[in-house]
Image (tube, rainbow, N blue to C red; front, side, top):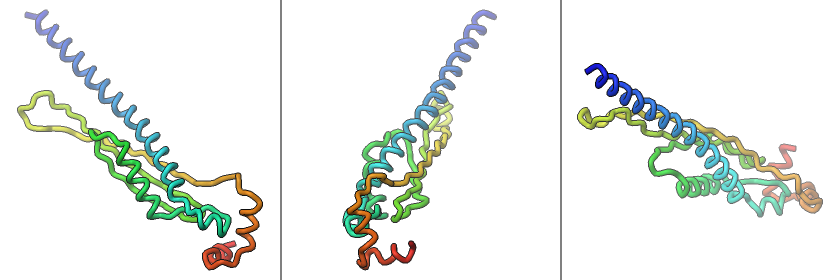
Length: 163
């Protein structure tokens, strides 16, 4: 009788340890995947939202806020994992110079209840990932710099007041 209970105890301990390892692995892997998904999506959405007419006229980079948010949400939604819930927050979007701060919270559902008798008792582990991005380039040509300094266009007048 003693050896039987000891065997059952060892098996239960092994199952608990495997479950704990699985939860920790999902948490760390989920955090890394969320970071790279957020980074690549933000960078691509910033390039999509680049206002090329402003670049040609004023010689500086500018992004459109609405276009950035639309592109970000479209790209992010097409690449997410359907088994997790996401909450997206845009904390800072500057048009000139282009800078964005984005934070996502992903909820992984952890089920600690092995028997289905007590209903669905599950807890959520929240993984928060934030990313700040600035769009810049060291490859401005002399023509673009001259256009930006010499233009008296209405679009660039706000820029001339700042500098």
